[in-house]
Length: 218
Image 1: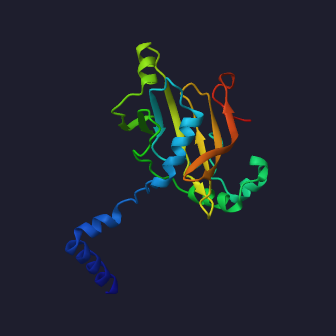
Image 2: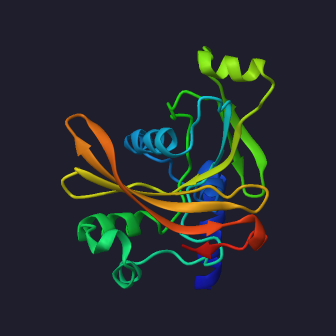
């Protein structure tokens, strides 16, 4: 008898509030990357990847959780302790924040400001969204006139880890190219005045043409 009372109560709640009943069955949407992360993304792209002729950057829509294409494991504090990254100079609170944010993927939005048109893709390369500059830089126009397209395909970003004081940041950026080549980097940033400076870089993996796409450690 108690079972039927419980069943009637559930049905009644759905009938009374069908929106609440539907919402309860919907999957949880991924959170968006906070606005503060994009200053580091922009600096990484400008310092490591852009050239005077770059006309388009292809970006993975969801943030990366793994630090090596052949090792799909989320990084841990213990993993960092086992590595010799940056001569073990990374602050522990920076590592902990980076690891905590790597536990789940977040959604990137159209907040990039590195000055070149970019397009989001998801997974195997399904187009997701695109944003474009209204004003094309002179260097880009010259390159287009020469008929030499330059597309960065593609970049994958992790979430950005910060120290408790907010004066240092850690970011993983991967550049897995369609031809199987590419590399993955850990970037360590230091805050200076009101901006950021790229302080040091570690190459985590490199994939070369002769390796036929297999990611090799540096």
